[in-house]
Length: 185
Figure (tube, rainbow, N blue to C red):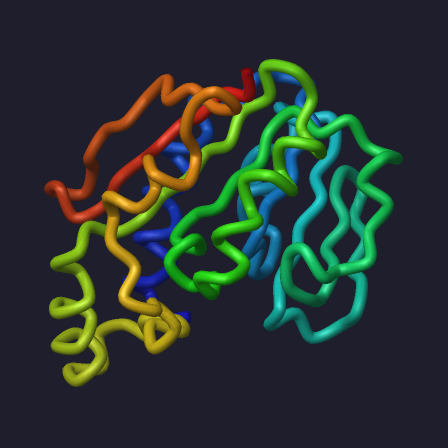
């Protein structure tokens, strides 16, 4: 990751952090190196991360564990944990459309009542910017070839009533990124 990638990740973590309640058990889909859990060290009870680019199959730390693989195919006993919050920071657009279709249902059964799903997705214009910044070698733009034609408006269509209620949507990073917070009904 280049410095710009790390800077952008820090901004996303800051936006997501304000919606993570103290003592939560958090599932981070697309956890990369566990940066969210490192940042939330004293705030969360425990973190479970899933990351396809992980070097090891499992990485254990004091208050979190990372599993190599992709959601939902990673073999984790989710019943063992009472997951309060699921995060996907700049990840949903990288998930194939067939998995996106089943994602809301899978998460619904994993989440505790009133549990939250916190998502950041770039605005549709960002793909054009990434091409230029990658060409200039300013950022890596991790796996941007996997965007599958994803549109930002698709987020609300995936996580909708009666199972989920949108409790927050706001733009940040000069409108180039979006934060969505859904609550399980």
